[in-house]
Every structure is written in structure tokens, then in C-alpha cells.
Length: 284
Image (tube, rainbow, N blue to C red; front, side, top):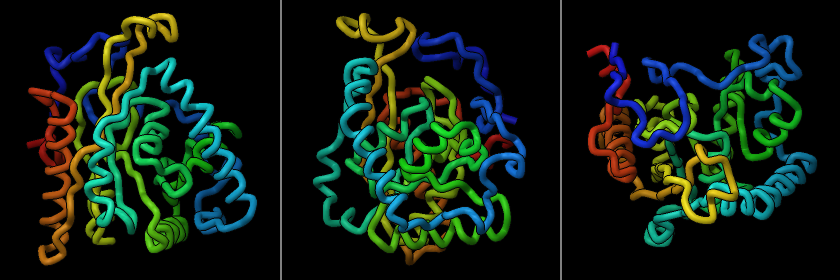
């Protein structure tokens, strides 16, 4: 097994966090581990594809909160900077039919940062760990109406989940996936990627847009707007990766995974990333 040695401690000493040695270890607490005891069960009874007025209204309300109210928090307290928006203009034609985006998973509001960077608040859909939706009513509202789609926990749930993603893509909407799978707050390196989003990009024959979040030291006026050990954030949009459908799915998925991982490492300015791109290399 690949083990993260002591010399790979944080690039910046942001918070006193001990990270696991295995990159897919979950660090965020799950309150309801048995979904059958929660408010929702993630089978075909869950509204994976929802075109109701109630859903659209709540998505619009959620988008308003994120676009205007949360924006103040991001700018004033987190010092959020967005870089690379010229790339969206450069590939405007190619991205007109939607795309798949990926980003490192390093903060409770990193999905909001992705939506803000891409300008997608109501047309973004995000596969999420289903059990998080049973944590609390507020947590459910924020995740669901930000576009969260719980990964099915039964065969019927997975079928409904896949149908929903296919439908949203056919409408020209976006799908965002955190390929590192689990959230490690303030982690400065890029961990190995699961193949899911790259398989989606190949299946849909659409662009895959990598983004990367990095951290800056809290300086100047920002020392007054947040905790001293909370960094400032930068999110950077990187050059998209395009699938080649003349090649086999396996070879293209691996190529896109490796390419996106490398672009994110370089985009973050990391000289020696301790993790391989592909989890298959962890035991090599």
C-alpha cells in the first residue's frame, strides 16, 4: 500500500489535521449509517429525476443564496479568487452542450466555488454519497437543491441514478464529480482519482473540465475576517480534456484521468505530488 510519509506533511501549516495513509478514507462524519433508519432510502423510490415546481423553486432559491449571499462570505471571509475564466470563453462552442467537471475535494463549500467559477448554479448536477443527505434537514436542502444526486444504494436506485444523469446531460446541463471521492479539508496535494467522471465524459463524448483549489496565507485585511488558521482560497479553471471515441473506452478513460490529474498538479504549483493519479498504482 502507498503510505504518505512524514515529509509529505502540509505545504502550508494551515490547521493541525492528521490525514489518513489511505487516500479514500472518509474523514467527514456520517450521522445515519443505515439509510433504512433515515428520512430517505436511495432506491427507485427516491426522486432522482425531478421536474416538479417545488424542485425548480427550491433550486432557484438555492441559486440565489449561493450567487448573492454566500458570495459575500466567499469574498470577504475566504478571499476567494477565480482564475482561468478565459478558458471558458476559448471553448465556448465546445462547452455549449454541457460538460463534466472535476476538482479536488478540500472544503465544505468547494462545490459552491466550482459553481461560481463555472457560472453554473441551476444547471449543475453532482453525484454525492447518499448517506450525507440524512445528516440534517438543512444539509439535505443545501445539497439536494445545489444539484446533489445521491448515488443509489440498490440496483433500482443505481438505474434511476444513471437515468437521471443521462437525462440531465441530454439537456445540455453539467455534471460535477469529485474524483478523489472523499473530502479532506485543506489538503494541499492531489490524491488518486476514481474513474467515474472520466467514464462519463467518454460515454457522453463531452469535454472534461478540471479545476483545482489552492490555498494562500491569510494576510492583510483578511486577518480580521476569519480565523488565523483558515487559509484564503483560489480556484483555477484548467484546459479541458477531450475524449477520443475512436479509441477504446479503457485506454481513453485512463488517458483522461492521467491528463486531468497532471494538469491539476501543475495548476496547483505542486513540485512533488506524493500520490499517483491511478489508485491501481497504490499497491504497485
